[in-house]
Image 1: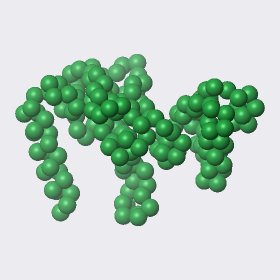
Image 2 (image 1 turned 30 degrees about the vertical axis):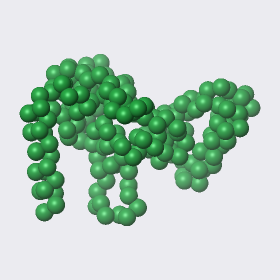
Image 3 (image 1 turned 180 degrees about the vertical axis):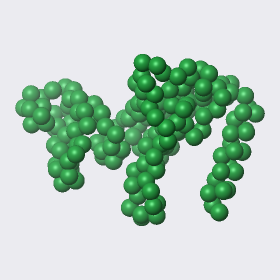
Length: 182
């Protein structure tokens, strides 16, 4: 497919999970070809993938989606350095680390909601470790947290939830972190 794209010289190529089930050698070759197509022919590539390593290597701008909605969007370096949405954080935490300190890979608890019957509030709230009451009641908008970096999460809107609720959530998270240290 990539060979056909190189011959046809498209302006846009949509790559849906282009490296799934490939060994690392073939994956590297495919990614090299895609970058060559992008650089030599000026082809824009829309990459659809769960592989954040591929995203880091090939992409310039990232849209993280969950249940059909963009949850976070930013330039690739911004996204990896200042990850903000709980779903994006979960995706990055689930990547195996080379230091091997973790016995089990991190998983995002819960089940993806039925897209025909989405929850009343945020589509990720049932799986979110940082969910607040307001997350279950209404759907958040996209909030720009830095130039070019937007997040669909009430944590980034001062008036979305009461200050007391946000403070209580931070206190609870602090207690959980203390317990983890022991």
